[in-house]
Image (cartoon, rainbow, N blue to C red):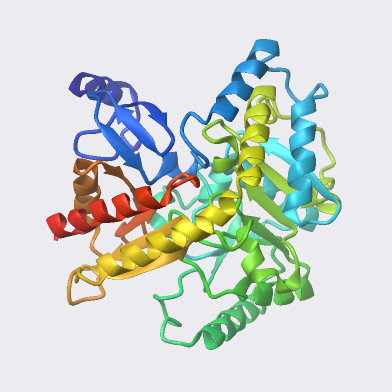
Length: 427
């Protein structure tokens, strides 16, 4: 592995992060497990950053990929594409957006970039509202609306971004308020902000902030925001790159926890739908999607192979009620992790929904984030045979847990036990 690591360092940018003091080369996977180049087996609780949504090497997906690759691999959007149309039809219906149109991209970054293009073109404004502690991608436009300094390498921007309170429930100036008063305070902040600026194009928000450490507002916040936004004609973009497809258990989309005011104007998705294939996309009502007055295509978005994989993956997810599994097994896993956390003074909070769980670590006896502890637990979990992620806002001190949605009860128990040992070893 040392040789490959040195080769990596010689050709890759310094800012291309790798996990672990001894980086892993993963060679194959099956179900909820992966193996490294040394033959070590790991229970995977991160799924390639929430991307291996159903299972590693899911037979239905690998078969669909092989069969489509044997017919034609690529054609571009200049030609009719049956798998793309079939998947767009299904997603349009599932999205909840009336008269929906779907455009496929190759990543969540590109999906959010497209959503920002649509919103600013439709509204004739380059001002964007975004949430503090947010993450929306690595392109020039998406970095500029990311409210997380660790993932925003430049202050230069094609957009004027204004940041709104509400993405983090248990930190910040409104943390001590009740849920109802928290929402009222955030709405008042939004109304005040809109009184001091020209009308923005859109609010872009993750229903549950992913890179930010799986934080979320109380249910109903974005519905309350939507009432204010509608009065000003401001669009709502729901970034569902990590929250989509039933991962939260309670809802198919994250926005449905805030559905009192209806669906978003624009919805973005990626990651899990392709189960590892490079797929992203945008759903918007026709009036918004069709607002562009210039030609556009996608060379690789909507590729026949990635569409075939996504169709097979989506069918498997729906046919096997993986949303229900995320709710049931995820609920059990959260209970186990909260029991584990009760024995660790380093754990400030266990939060999340379904199979999207965060464990926030602090220096014992304080409310101060402890990124060193998070790194130590990550290493100890790996030594115990478990792969997890990490994230967080001002400091990276949250363990991120998001297994494939076919996770079994036995595997949830096993992962919780490994995490208990890792927290003890690191603490």
